[in-house]
Image (cartoon, rainbow, N blue to C red; front, side, top):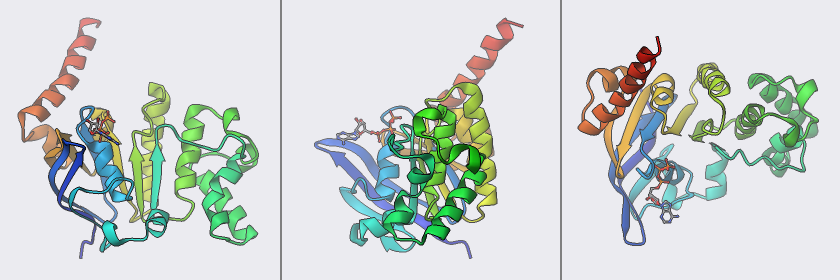
Length: 255
Ligand SMILES: Nc1ncnc2c1ncn2[C@@H]1O[C@H](COP(=O)(O)OP(=O)(O)OP(=O)(O)O)[C@@H](O)[C@H]1O
């Protein structure tokens, strides 16, 4: 039986008098990679932050792994949800190993377990532990720092990973490389649920098992990349898809 690991039930969110999210209803299956695509201000980040309790719905319920976020202990909840953001947020005065070990240290894991976890996570994200673990964040490129951000978010082996535009500050080549690595990582990690916010249509279509297209705080379509492209449900999605074709015709001009 497929387990619905994340459920939104009639969720509304207001900031002051502004309706930012209106009657959001969707569910995500365990192990799925769902990308969230939409224009700036469409409510993607707010939706993501309601999953780990950083934002609270004004009305409605967010259910994670069978528990209503409203009544969860937030520290416990966040230990089960990795969170990777664009700004990365590594501690500059700590080495890479110390950065990855922050939560394991808080949980008082024994030293050997922490050392092994750091090594295996660095290997998993493609950074040789012996080369990188004793460096400071400033001694790594943006792409390498983002890999460490992913390793740190995985340190407690959470079943859910949230990504909020993690690659948007990276150059196109590094970004594409990390997109491929993340897709492989999701396959390798078997059964982890990834929820990934982006405003890049190519990224959303490449990474997602399903793509959730948002506009003005509502879902326009939540579907496979193939169906989004072949059966766009709304004019907004058609417009998004037409931006890709515009780029193609730009390229044609230079051939
Ligand atoms: N803490 C807040 N207080 C007031 N308004 C907010 C707050 N957070 C978000 N908003 C507003 O809610 C709306 C949705 O913001 P959100 O960050 O969820 O959009 P987004 O789709 O992630 O946009 P972007 O792609 O630009 O990051 C925006 O109009 C934003 O200004």
